[in-house]
Image (cartoon, rainbow, N blue to C red):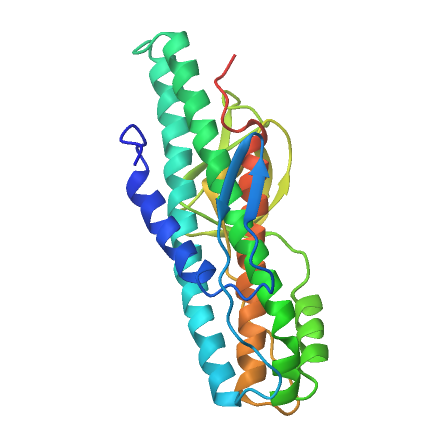
Length: 271
């Protein structure tokens, strides 16, 4: 364990949640899985679970229900870890601005933080890749238990759309320009839902109700949970669980994309 990591508790929760999902990976081959990003690499062994055609519907329902619960835990842990990383970056910048630490020290701390974040993102991508492989492998079993599930799942995913809805992790100042020193023109309250569009320098253009508009760091937000779309037709609970599973996986994928946008330039010192 990296004792210098100020987010080690959140990292431990995230790794534990990822382990719960990776332990049930159903990829057919037994080779190692690796995820690499900006020099950070994470690897793990695969295990295999049987999702053979004709498996009882109750078994599939139980598996999907457990995976959905594990996905909820993963999302909560990932959000908490990213928020902790963002707070760390903000603290380093504040200490430099107040001349409490020399610039070389601040640069070293920020570089270490970026390296940790890249490892976090590599880990998250590996978990997401495993989830997508598993979803592909179990399609025959789902189709056997609830004919038409594949088509319903595809429609459900298409219906979620690509809107980037987020919520503020804490009270977030809105700036006139995508710069940390730009004038503050408004605030997003903690928990308030808004929409964001990538801007520059780790900032996003934020828009909300009542004409709320301005720029804020991408890392200050978390993906707003997508609700599972209603899927009609036979299959009952299996289809409901499939739709929920898709929504939860898409939530996590969106969170990962948002984190990558923040990592591009949102973890830098002010010039």
